[in-house]
Image (cartoon, rainbow, N blue to C red):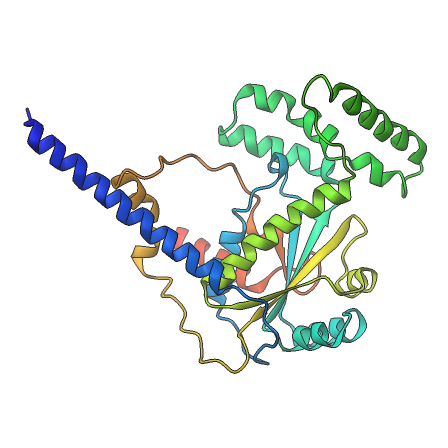
Length: 316
């Protein structure tokens, strides 16, 4: 048996290591948040390495969403011709126009306005992953359909608009009547719900890009109707915002992290060994090529195809 002195020393050493690890993570995150500013201008015609993009997108994919429906897609516009067309015909204001032209890429976030069409796929993924309790899965379809507010938006475009409008009205009346008695959800239209989720994902993307030394600028000044036509985005989706991404103008070149460094993959192990937060199994995510597209909606993002081919070669 270990003596009390040895036991106390071991515990103190573990606590010290845990505090050192916690301080390092907090310092790193503070540096990221405090270094993020909206870029006024980007260095034109400077490409971001593909491995940096892949890491940014992999971190973006971890973004949370309501009911884990993952109702957001992202286009990564890197083609100069597409960016120029978007700049000329859809962007509002001189600043947004030249940022769209000069940035290495424009991340266009697309919010699904018919999220009920995703439920079956997400339900199957959740059940297969085993991360959810049976009780949660039993109510997932009903709860997500009820709370996303889809009917209130469909009523303006659907032939059965009157019935869906009545459905939305009854939901709001029901929740409002019960609210004085017990907590009830606030019923909102699907655009509000889906745009909130897109905003969460865009923030994850922005912080991930900042962690890699990239500069960003969130943009809301654009004609969404024209942008959807240029980028071939279906009517099912709205565009809450875009994020110009690249290298800040007139500053020293960015030195990117070595993504082959084994230390970057050891964060979780360090947490366990130093008494950090216990590992929790992540909820499932859609495949990257289902979420991220190239210069038009549904177009494969080439850098992801390269990643998939590399994985297949290793498996072989």
